[in-house]
Length: 576
Image (cartoon, rainbow, N blue to C red; front, side, top):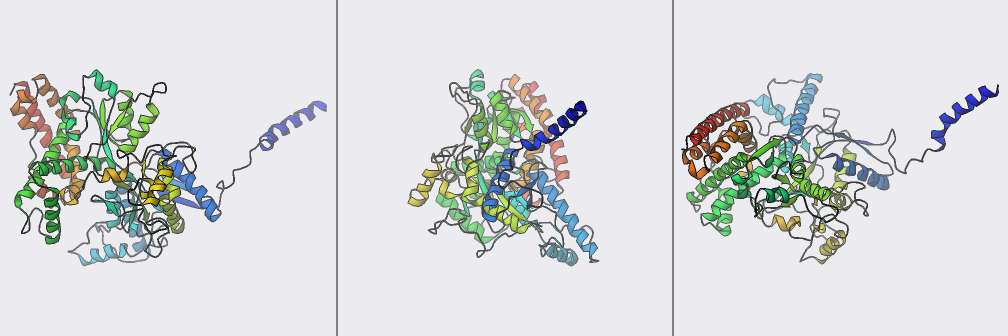
């Protein structure tokens, strides 16, 4: 009897112990029935985790309920755009058929341009953009958070996102402070940071990361400070790059390299900033065909822009000669450089800052990774947040956008973990978009705010080398030069440096073994040729032929480059 009692007592005690010693749930912890926001994002896990917790706490304090964010993480921005595009196309077709409405097979309702030749398709294109009710159609995702301005701008033109606020409904404290001073400009130095559809949540720059110990081992006395340095064949087999077709932010980096070459060539030709500004105003006002200059603008100026464009592509090919690998994951580059698996690479600023922090020698503070913003070599662009069409949780989505853009949300980007209002675990090491996080010489209130924030930030945002507004003023982005080529650059660089990468590296090895580029001029001439199919390559032609099937272009270009590089390798081995 006693034995049975002890057995029963022990069993009850084992079952009861977890309940006896269970900790009380934290105030505001999410439970079934509380709000859920669905967001799609290319942001890394640490960013997603910190913003999920931060928003839930903010929402609990303000509205009395915590929030769970259901993250849809399917890859980079390219994969996200492809996914939501397909989902909206299917959802709209299902809506039309469900309601016994006419539908034209083959119509692309998410095309950026309205169909001109078919009224039925044009009507569907317009109708797709006339709905923002989840009862009609949607994709069961509320927010698009992260990625570059190009992709968010594309999403708006494709009708995938909608305007979140009007001037009357805009939350206070987002665009202006209490005194009416602007704390969130529309953009700076030619880059758009916000428009009616998207709002940059955080800012990014692009640059070069390198391992000082590896460069020392290689005999490099002067580390790279500008994009042109990366063509030095001393770095053969040591440069880590990221596939531009996988990431909008990485593709932006390559655009910056080409844009910088445009500027360099234009400056070297003797054109001044005053002349360039005047020319570009006249070109914009005239609205002439691509490459045709209006009265008062020398054709020579346009020719120099085009020479710079070509020089930029050549520079990227020369970088491709030094490539160790192309990765799908942008964050891998600084990790490998810090570990010495590659000597240097091209990186988005915050990836390198985080890696520099975690790999710093704890004893002497020595850096295993150094990040350089090439002076005048990169604009400061935004990673926006947008509201998706047909959101099922629109009010909650707008609150999330408000939080991300508010002072509370902006603290997460650069505050140290554990500081008041900062992240709980991970230092995100990114640049807030709000003006009041950076020094100001003409607004004492904003400057005082920046000084207060700087007590808690991981990076010294008062330093001109880090201050996003100071860096932005070092670079004037001119959209006409390279902006409309963005998609072209992605595909062309992949064909030129990745899909023909084996041949390019073999050619480079042969050129080095022959004594370098100076010893084999014919090989270098062959190496630097540009394709003539499916069209003759030029600044203008790449714009006028943008409707050609991208897969056809990729095939033609890849075949050309492989054959060209093989010929160059043969010439190098012959010492020509």
